[in-house]
Image 1: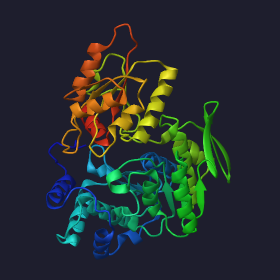
Image 2: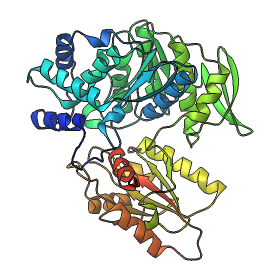
Image 3: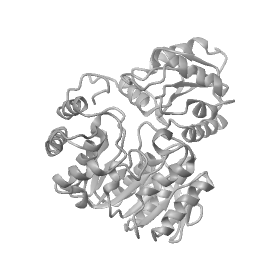
Amino acid sequence: MIPRGQTAVSEAAQEIDKLMGLHPKGFDLSLDRITRLLDVLGNPHHRLPRVIHVAGTNGKGSVTAFCRALLEAGGYGVHVHTSPHLVNWHERYRIGLKGGRGQFVDDAVFAEALRRVAEANAGQKITVFEILTAVTFLLFSEHPADAAIIEVGLGGRFDATNVISDPAVSVIMPISLDHQPYLGDRVELIAAEKAGIMKSGHAVVIGHQEYDAVLDVLMSTAERLHCPTAVFGQDYMAHEEYGRLVYQDEFGLADLPLPRLPGRHQYANAAAAIRAVKAAGFVVTEAMMEKAMNSVEWPGRLQRLTDGRLIPHAPAGAEIWVDGGHNPGAGEVIAEAMANFEEKQPRPLYLITGMINTKDPVGYFRAFVGLAEKVFCVPIRGSDAMIDPVILSNSAYDAGLVAEPMATVGEALDAIKEILDPQAPAPRILIGGSLYLVGDVLADNETPPK
């Protein structure tokens, strides 16, 4: 794979570099430009297989991974669009194969789609994200599959993916504060933006929500649009019982293995996926659910690193996790997972954190007070939006944690090795705060081929 920030060698990455030089970064919160471009391309978004459209502040990626695992367990071909990527651009486009696992888009196919979309745009004002979204629709419309799982980039109502007018189901995952400059500074306002992916008369599945005000907004929108709605905790649910996952909805009950993805929050994510795939009109058997729980994968979300080039920097026997969660809601979920690990096997916890300046670092760090021994703040390579490690360390202090800036993740791992009490158990280390940082870490940790 091609690490972010290094010289692009793939044909598609070179095309994207050209687009980056021509068009502005960021988002355009309207649908006018993407609608115009898609019209020139022949409206490929109207020629998709059944669409599962996913929005939310946290859990979008996980529910997407569970939906894909479920459908592939049933032999369905599944296209998947996610953003952002971790290491290379191709990760955003998984092309479904009938009767088998999908694969990331072929480089030559990707590059050609980029050129076709750029030519159709004819130099008009547009963002790169809108071009990449048009590429999603073009690729997915030209490769046969049974379903397309499409993750919202930002918000919902004005996200470029929201040109989808006929989803099989819209899925709204947990909503909390994030992207406030774009979406609003109250959870109710953010919920209203994300509810914008609901379409009149089309099924909606609502994931676990922490805030009653959020659920009120989502339910009132669904009722106004006459959407058949399934709500976590009311119409479907999941919980652990005797080391198993018990899932229940109006269709029955299933006794399943615990999901392969760690963390109790994944129980609700798995449940939302099961209910969403059913709402999309697919038959879901218990055998499919069981296979999905055992096979689901989602890199960069509570992913454990056990080998690679960074591992020797850490203390011997250290347990190293990476997670791209980057807002207060994600911080609470990840901290809960770390606390559960601590309960089962006590280890001192150290954080290595990098963040960008659209996030709430104090809110993120606050979840780890009383749990983490120390935070090492690091830069994010190649990002002009990163928070300087010194400033980020001050935010950690403001939250009640001890913190220190470091130049690299490797140096932070070395520092943990130096300060660790030799009588203490090997540490647990969480590297996160940004998907971009996790992408850098996964790229740096790769072992070169022999």
